Amino acid sequence: MTNTARAESTSDRPDDRAASALRFATELVAWVATPWALAGHSWLLAAMSVAALIGLPTLFSTPGDKANVIIAVPGWTTILLVLLQLVAAVVFSWLAWPAWAAFSVTLLAAATLVTERRRWRWLISRDRFAR
Image 1 (tube, rainbow, N blue to C red):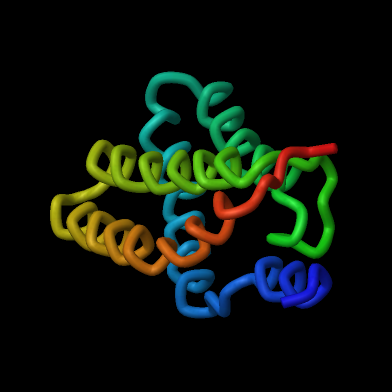
Image 2: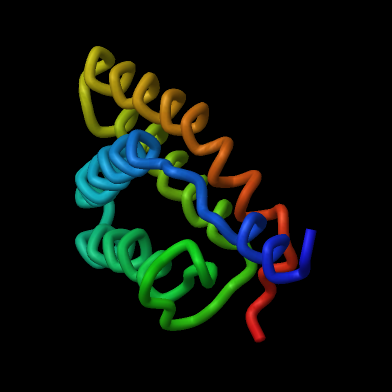
């Protein structure tokens, strides 16, 4: 296998349309549940949580994973940002909403974890450190 062919085969991002849909749904839940749960304590904290949950993944991304990269980070950082969204969705849904809704969010996050595995393997399969 030539270096060019090897580079093309290893840089191919896996098709993750289902994972992307589940990930986006979980992110939306995190963006709603987190400030909802925090608003009773501090409106400033609630606003900052939304800014962090939306802003961090917008600013920091792994080259090849998104079309537009503002600040390049290694794949493991992208994985941690997704985990932050999943944890926020689950934890704050349990704090803010009835059990049936929080349980549904927990199932959604679990499904997202399962479907993200291929993308995460791809993200850490190569040296993706920002140059």
